Amino acid sequence: MRLPPLLVAALVLLLAPAAGGTTRATQSAAIFYYPWYGTATRDGSYQHWQQNGHRPPADVASDFYPLRGAYSSSDPAVLNAQMAEIAGAGVREIIVSWWGKGSPEDGRLPAVLASARVRALEVGVHLEPYAGRTMASIAADIAYLRTLGIVDVFVYHAADFSAADWAALTAHVSGVRLFAQTPLVGFAKAGGFQGVYTYDILTSGGAKFARLCGEAHRQGLLCAPSVGPGYSADRATGETQSKPRRDGATYDAMWTAALRAKADFVTITSYNEWLEGTQIEPARRRLGYESYAGAWGRHGAAADNAYLARTAYWTSRLAR
Image (tube, rainbow, N blue to C red; front, side):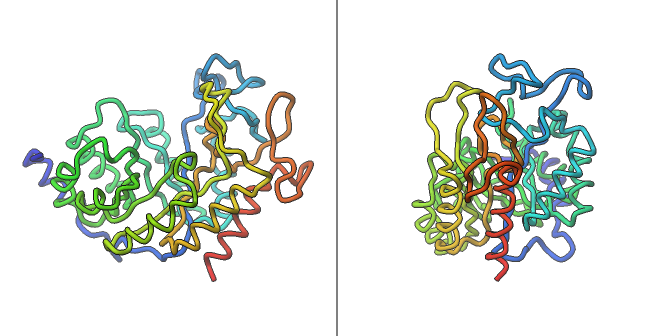
């Protein structure tokens, strides 16, 4: 694939190495973050909470119920509280779900950046498979994100395009770290990526981390396997396949596997993907919903924040 000459020139100018380079300390944690929730009061309609025919605020498209209720990602108070929780858990970077220029997530990105930086959090982007995503549009996306100071881009479904197509793009990119969501390390290396990550905790469990990181390191790539508390999407999508939380044992097992695999850093799926039930954002007990009760022996109000507290434990181990 050959990129348009003007786009190549833009990339060369916009993606020049940033001051201090893009290297970050290893053995840290980053977390996937979703700024896509809306409410009728603040956004004109409910967004995502109403998926699959649900009727928020009492009835939401999640197997769990948020401690904050059905909130808006446009609410500064919510955003600032979320960034405080993430920073308090010892996480150093948020990876923001982003669906292209002009999307609701793009419109909320400046506020997320500002709030995160108040808490000294780095911000990366999860480049989602938006409608019409092409190599040319991705090149323009990276250049645009670079103007916002974003230098970590995690490409979901990277294998939607060939390694040769990626190589044609990455040959013109500097000052940005690109991570491919793929178990195929050879593909990521051939495509010019700097690292690999897994994201999907349902099909990419901890048993696969040692092989992934071993292959990545032999190829000179960074390895950022994704850990998560569990997976449960029945209310949002009707999917019956799940990964039980086992009172926190699932989360612990995945963290243990990531550390044993000598991950360069750990990515967490997720802070607030409520639809798939991978969230660690505080949840509360509500009739008809699952809860965090029993996780690490916690009950009542202490259970609401159980996963944030456990994340702080694991990130403290990374810092040693």
